[in-house]
Amino acid sequence: MKIIFFGSDSFGLPSLEALIKSKEDLVAVITAPDRPKGRGLRIEQTPIKEKATFYNLPIFQTKNINEPCFREILSSLNADIGVLIAFGSILKREIIYLPKMGVINLHPSLLPKYRGSAPIPWAIIKGEKETGNSIIKIDEGVDSGPIILQERIEIKPEDTARSLSERMAEEGASLLLKAFSLLKEKKTELKTQNEAEATFAPKLKKSDGLINWKRGAVEIHNLVRGLAPWPSGYMYLEGKRLKIWDSEIKKEEGKPGEILKAQEDQLLIACGKGSLLIKSLQREGKRRMAANEFLRGHPLKKSYKL
Image (spheres, rainbow, N blue to C red):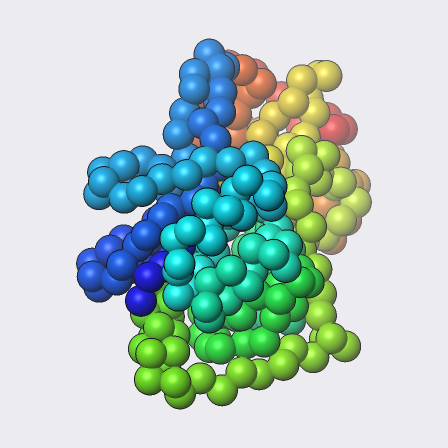
């Protein structure tokens, strides 16, 4: 089959690699433009462009996939199907139905739960014990198309958004190949999503990471896990932002935001219910460090209130 691959984020890399190794005919890879990134604002390619360049695949970059001039380019490719994974833009009807079989999407949630751009972080933040991948046929809604295949995936207690995303990306690539086999054999049974069960996972904002110590330790711990690596859970200490990278739930009680322990490797902060042991953190503009290293340079007194 002639395939157009739409993707930008690294989540799509295992799937792109799987399609390449399966000898499918990738007639184009569509990705976002190169952008300045980091402190030095160095121009960087998307991970998908880097992979496509390595394999000498035809690459097209655009800020607006729905522009009429781009529709003409895609139409000229005479593709059988499109595959969209973490692309970053919503396709309009004119693009969706250019390939003969439409466009399919790998979405990292058990749809209709967690539609939207950040399903993996929100599943962890909400304390879910499992999530999964869905392969759907794209329609004109947001992650609302009929389901081709789904697969359940455990959310492990130690998972962060990064570790879970990496695992789901690998497993999603296998699911995508299964979907292709079904499509080729014309054995797909599309399942309509139940709109009454739909939930949403909106795009993350930096402000989502601000810790409210009045919440329970479990809830704050899930926030820290779900927002690693970006935007990260954070608190303010003496007016400066501190990112919390790793934490552990404890049973000790105190007034929310009160430092219960600040000695050796123990930085323990009271929450609305229980307490949180901070295991690693990062000062604004500095490197990540273990709590004991931080405390050596920034001694804190017990009962200090955040």
